[in-house]
Length: 261
Image (cartoon, rainbow, N blue to C red; front, top):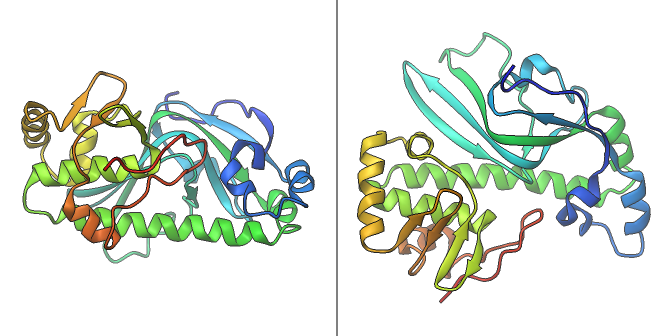
């Protein structure tokens, strides 16, 4: 069934799968940490997903996305907000989502856009990770970074012009998953106009019109596999990130380089 968990893939060496996480451990102890930090590995196929029903990772830290793309939607009275999750993101989908006590009666849904592999950081994996305390801080940092990304995305959604929202969102995603290429930055995410509209709290036809206008100005293009971004980083995004353009920081398995000037 689409979006359901497939058969477990076995066990993975977490710090080999996520090299950025390994960097938290001092080099002298890193080989031991790589050998010890094992976690169950599962794969989720594309489609709707019920992670709460899957009951994975309970009693532990949660689920760490190793690759793939997942969208989380939260709706109240027919109006929805969406969050895009990918490599490096830490999930606890059961937390606050399986009780009926919320006075807002929020509707929460998950959809896998690209098949994903997840490391299950259950109690046994958490015990192994605890032997290397630096990893705890690194995982807490991942959770806080997800909160920061949500806050920036909220600020983007409140921009009055949809063209500005589109540019800011694509450059924000490029900060995590993009790589510099001649003439700009490549963002290897197959995001449809409908998905972008969900992330931007806009109507799909409006997003399509905005993308067409940006394409005419050769600022944004899509070849069916990758988005290509050209020109300077949107000043509105620079303002959200501080006084200087944010760097294309190396997220898990990223080949990103600094922002083009």
